[in-house]
Length: 407
Ligand SMILES: [Zn+2]
Image 1 (cartoon, rainbow, N blue to C red):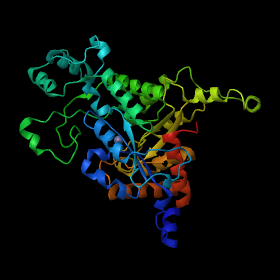
Image 2: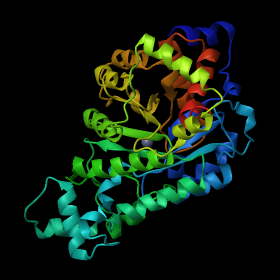
Image 3: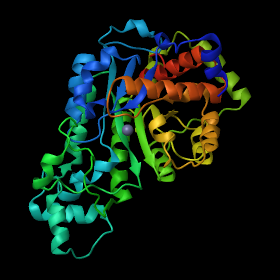
Image 4: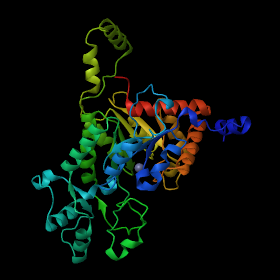
């Protein structure tokens, strides 16, 4: 362990939390009892994701008490009061995508009757069966009543309007997961009452996956919503890095940036300078007006290999792409990119101004702080940054991700 550790050991330098450490992706509303500990945390602001039916309103309630009430790229940690601790994010995670149906496939129906519900699950779950056994019918009937996409998107739009700093997340695609079976009523008392319902907990794994095309429809609809509302998104991608990129790319088709030659850039700067006082509002309007793609995208706990990440470095991409890393996922044994050196190569490849840190933990408090400190130290070492320098850079990156460039 090079620089960061040495700093601490040699100088006895404590971790400079006061510079502001920001968690770019976490789920503390999975453990609501941990929420009152937010003001006691060392991390300054948490970016809190919603994932499913049960946590959207919990994230909103947490924002009512602990949400930030101001913010821009220039904000320093002390502009926020001790109670301003989080940024709410609203979105539907791919693990729960089967619990939603595309109402445009069902004549705009707001709910499905018992038979149609079974048909829905038969359609969106893989392996897809032509004929269902009685047992399979029973399993599908026991799954949650699916809700229409359009209703969820309307609800999310209302949350985004109500919380002007809210982002869209967690959304994405996942080829590795299997859905959990419903709790059998006799077993329900085994569940851990301190956890927000609807999560995976220890429920039995079913043999079913969710068809990637179904996941993609929901992912894309949420990307469009983020573009319409000009909010950043936090994206989950597991064993689906190619199709995550393709899906995002489809949203900005026709909006690619023209990559200018040196001479063209010079000419453009001259024009901008000569127009400095005219059309200023128009240009600003252009920045914030609705688009079909999100302005900023964070690939959270990014687990693709360096080559897959390189596609995001194309200068024609009209969105700003960030990548965040967590001890919980990126340093777990299961991560896709294999050896730790692959992770280091990847982190070196992420531009210095697009790197973020996250915990991805389901409980707020000291462990979340420890995870953040661990990953910040690693990022500093890999990037060759001093600890204070690294924390400041990561903080600036987080503000750029959440608030975007100055309006
Ligand atoms: Zn997550």
